Image 1 (cartoon, rainbow, N blue to C red):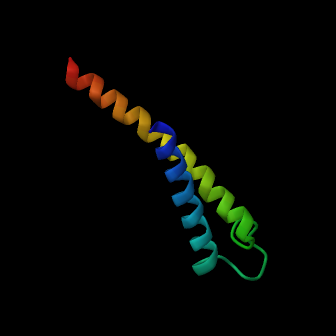
Image 2: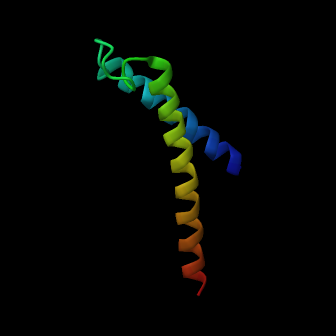
Amino acid sequence: MKQIWKILFVIIGAALGFAYYQFIGCRSGTCPLTSNPWISTGYGALLGLVLSFSSRKTQKNSSDEESN
């Protein structure tokens, strides 16, 4: 179940990264992150992965505090 959440975060991050490229990204090619759909999708997936780790620790810490 833990891996499913991480995969879900990565997929959502990738989709948001591509959506950022599609709707906001620059078309002139001067913006290295948003002018290429592969790069913006990859960064979105990476951000989703990072968020999946940080949300996991937050949930664990809050459950530890409740048991005390």
